[in-house]
Length: 171
Figure 1 (cartoon, one colour):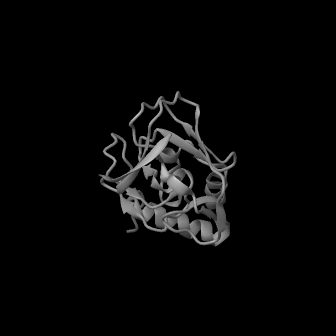
Figure 2 (figure 1 turned 135 degrees about the horizontal axis):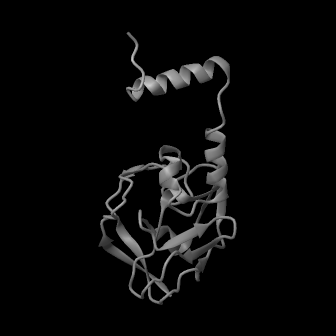
């Protein structure tokens, strides 16, 4: 159903589908994996401090800022984000599963709205992330990161932000 093509992309190998998929259709189920606490470039994050490895050919799915699949770490499925034709490489948006990448990289996907640096959801704005399917654990980590500071911490953070953005000038 899917085959690995070596030296076929800028990333090296890629996973290509041999079958057409309609938007919303299950492309693959994620099974037979091991849960580990440390991320690698071949793991998928499923929760804070939880990553899965030994994923078979799924590790050959490359990143795209215009992905054709979505990995759902709750249902452990990969579904078509749009119609996919036979022969297309299967891609997903890495920050949809990863809070902080083990190996950040400069994206070369060529998408019109490419994010540039792929380092994890932690490093992207909520506005950018809102364009994509984002897993529940990443949504919770975003909310945790946005939890308001209190007292002097809030004043210091707000002042720093305003100074950095040139919205506040100190005479």
